[in-house]
Length: 95
Image 1: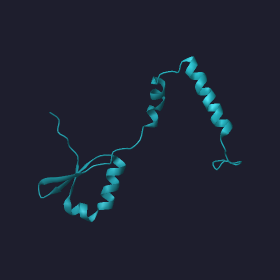
Image 2: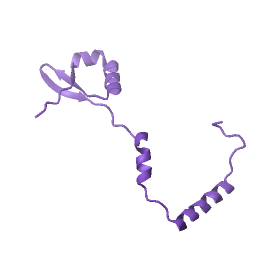
Image 3: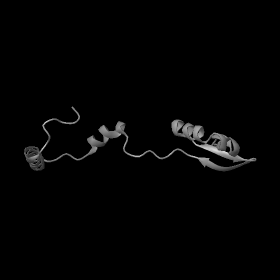
Image 4: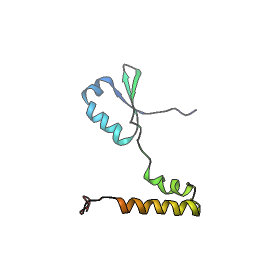
């Protein structure tokens, strides 16, 4: 059985250095246990990451089913219709 050892901080130290401790957890992505006396009373954990990791995007896209010929032509026609009917500004804001 492997012990789950994490960094600790006393409740007093946490009160004095809250912002620094929060930044440490955020940047290291590791939990910090908060100790009062000789007892662990809480843990400060990093927030869960939102979204989909870009590094996994190519694998995800390759696993999607391919369109058959009929649906491929239908999608191409839909995209052409969207482009033809789109009203875009003369100058795009992103350059």
